[in-house]
Image (cartoon, rainbow, N blue to C red):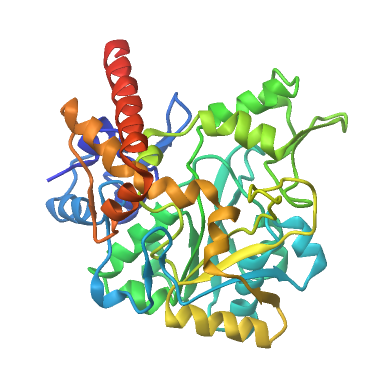
Length: 409
């Protein structure tokens, strides 16, 4: 049985907070804290009850990512997971379309859910009230809340750290999270009937990995800001598509960096290890997944020039497809069809990502690290599509990093 300390030591913790969230809220044995490395991690502060230990071992998405055949009600694509339909979409609210990171498709569906009364609130991640550089759980009940929470937050978050309290409280809610967050909640639903009762919809956004807060500091430093505490406002993206990383100082001075430089040049160098072996960056366990529907050049490579935002929208369950149809009929979102084949150009990294998992796990096994349980994801099929040379390159690169880390430790 894996406990939280074992999971952390193996580099498998994703920081979602589920291990803390399933405990006793009045007397928590596990709490989430920021580490000196800039990640969110669980800390054991009291003896963990055996039932909580067993539940954590079974549902922690850092350790367990697996489909159950009975839950899949759509054709399964090796790279993209279950897909009912693929579309491009954008919010009909032009202010929200600009505010959001990729056209506001996700925000539009949330607004429909609230407007129709199908949910009482939304659980999502937004900027913290305590610091413009930190994330916090936000409870959204209307357009103003959704508007504030719109936009990518390329930093650690733990949206499941109070999930048991949410399930005990009155009201139904939509859950929005990273793919691993949604996979964890879906795993919990298999053991806790309150999830199906309280969470009618789970929505995800595609994720290429979670950078540490040190990544945010590095972006600020590259902007010429040496004191992060001096920043009074910060956003990673949005206010356009893809939008600029923007920091504002007390005197109103604004510093900006384009998306390709901030994410592509800095933030993605600060990813936690678990993200580098992620078998699901595309939100396979959600009812609907949203992502950037990048426009591409004539060679099929994504373009990051400023344009009107558009979301890639993948409905993954029949329930999710019905929800999107409702939001479309009510005028919250506009959509157009997109061939499934074209997604690989819009999201080239995600196309290959699952293929990296098995070679990198083989490197973990080579140095004696315990392996996560990734099942029913067709990982071997995607690995084979990469070819032996690419697979070996990923094995060797991961092995070198793990050996170097052990020597440093």
